[in-house]
Image (cartoon, rainbow, N blue to C red; front, side, top):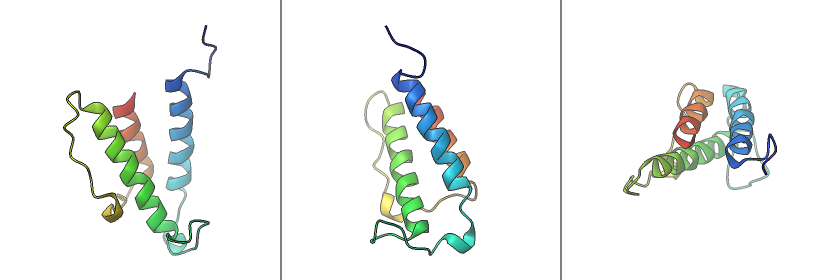
Length: 93
């Protein structure tokens, strides 16, 4: 028996809600700040995470598994990165 808050969908919803809040709060003056991932600054890491999220969501939503692999390293966040997270979450729902 699954209890509230323990299903995969509920856990994913909670993680994506947190991610949307985090990426939505990043300001332009923070984009070049360092991160614990020394290969990425804040903007690059945000683009990397959003690129993979968008790619996984597209692949999950494609019943035939033919969704093209996005070039996530070149992904640029939209003007509304939190909305991008919510849109990907909608595909994963």
